[in-house]
Length: 427
Image (cartoon, rainbow, N blue to C red; front, side, top):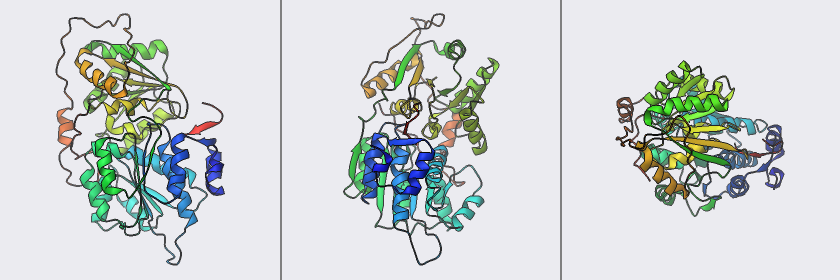
């Protein structure tokens, strides 16, 4: 199947072609026709398979096929909610890229930056608004944005929004929307919580699931390196230098751990930057841009930023710490092996994390291969120690939000749950 088979306009197909894409991914091939029909949709696919285009392309098509006439001013017709700033920016980039010949206007709003430019962009008139829940509610409380004419609502990465404690905010936003609208719920998993949300939100939805929930992309080679906890940093530096890795995304469990690892790697002569919720938005944007441009070798991230990191042909992902929520393992390693390319996901596992590893293997229904690196053999007599799941600083950041519009603080913590020339389109 080609994009030309899906009923998209010439203006949209022109933009797709300019990006070098010809064929839709399975989730796109199924979701684009479903969205164009106008009904509600519940869709799940492995991360990195192109869910964003699965809703942006048909939404653009629907808007240009049924333009609003008479008022002379643009009316906000589409609201796309995402859990993190990085993901919001990524979705907005997709809307701009593939809508550039349609004449439609969009903007993105999120916390961590000044609200005035966002307020001005909304006041100038929009067709599509991409937002994180916190900043949207703040602007709604200031009467800076009206949702009274919304025709299409998208909840992107809905499972992550629930994990981050956004359910209350989502319900407040839903209450401000027209009753008659199209609802699109996209998720990497079909958890019990997602199904409960869908039951209360969607009206006779079409169900699309292109891969088994919580399964890892088969294009990703997964490997476990057993190691003592105090040898993780030396082992990581050894792997990067010995294998001459040029672009490595590394996940840590805490913000403090991310900052500490960056300092250690820089001392080893390995260029690194960190991205997490305590970093300013400008610092996060610069770190991600430098990493994409390969100006730095290592980007160290916490799970808060995992869903918004979309890098074509990223070769290596390293779990420096295993996640305490098993599903996050799938999302982390899904940053590689995208758009049909192959990827490698390495996990450094100490004795403290053996239970976490068992939970992950149970979730993905496979035993992960293990390889001990010579010189970094773990002590067979080592005793497991309790894992500090979050730093004191992290705990403070999870207190109820009092304002400011940040999309990443003030949410309850999640409960623990165990390049080809003709590329596929994954944006």
